[in-house]
Every structure is written in C-alpha cells, then in structure tokens.
Amino acid sequence: MSIEELCFFFLSGRILIDGQDISQVPLTQLRRKIAIIPQDPVLFTGSIRFNLDPFNERTDDELWESLEIAQLKKVVTDLPDGLDGLVTEGGENFSVGQRQLFCLARAFLRKSKILVMDEATASIDMETVSFMITPYWSGFENVGGYLSRHRVATILDSDKILTLDDGNLVEYDHPDTLLNKEGSIFASLVNAKK
Image (tube, rainbow, N blue to C red; front, side, top):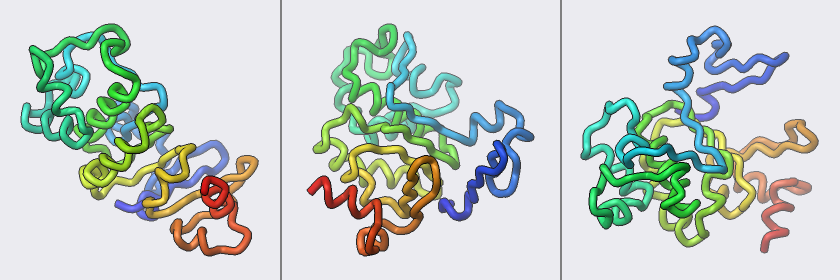
C-alpha cells in the first residue's frame, strides 16, 4: 500500500485514512493498524519475547526473523536465556540504539498497514542505518509510512518527500524530482549537508 493509497488528509482537526474518519474506528482496531516507533524507544520490564510480542501471537521463528531484520539476532543469541532474556526497567540493560532496534523489530512483527517513525534511527550510527535499511524495509512491503527524520541521508531512498515550512505543505514529490527542482527546500537541505 503506497502513501497515495493510504490517502492521508488533515481536515478541520480530522484525520481520514482511505476516506474513513479514524475517530469512528474503535481504538483497539486502530491501534492494531498503526505501528509507531518513537524517537525515545520504549521497552518494558520482562522478557525480550514479551517486549516483541506482548500478546503471544507470534511463533519463535517470526520473533527470530524480526530480530534478524533489526540486526539484533546475534545480541539475543549471545544472551544466556535468548528470547527469554531479561529486559530491565526501561530497557536500561541495552543501549539506546539497541532499544530503537527492538522497537523496529516489534513494529515488523505487528504487520501494521501504517508505520509512523519519529526519528526512529536517531540513536543508531549511520553505518548500522545503512547496513539495516535495505533488509529492514524489505520486511515492510505494502506498508504506508510516515517518517520524521533529521538526518537527510536516511530519507533519500524514500518514495516521496513531504516538506513543511511553518506548518504548511511546500513540497511533496519523489526525492530525485525535488533534488532537481529549482528553489526546492529539500534540495537546499541535502546540499547543505554535503
């Protein structure tokens, strides 16, 4: 499902997805359709298994696949209890970057149709981001996504770029189109980072 098919509209305080006002969708149903990966990663006290699959709906093979996509398989296999390894309060026994990767793995398992990422790779070094981005996105085929990122290099492979200025839509197009557009705000941001 592409961004165009999701058809996001922000009108008079309402959010429509595929023409349906989300305020009319039961909250539990809406939560299952949207995965959110925040800038400040959230892990809960319990096992890795619980953090990835709190409702115990996925197989071990699916859990391991999500960890592999998020580049965490080795980290978890190196733990004495593997998937049943302990996550301490707030996930403090893992680095901030690892906690973000666990959130990515959890989002992959949810199989949501909409993925919202708010600087979800902020605490991950660029080498890891480059290494993981191709396998990671291959796990999110047919998913519409909204990405909020501050590192321009991490969005150049996006299908579309939406540029806002003072809260107003200024540009919305493929990155290559915007890079070649005279006076493009997006192009100026990319060129400033070179």
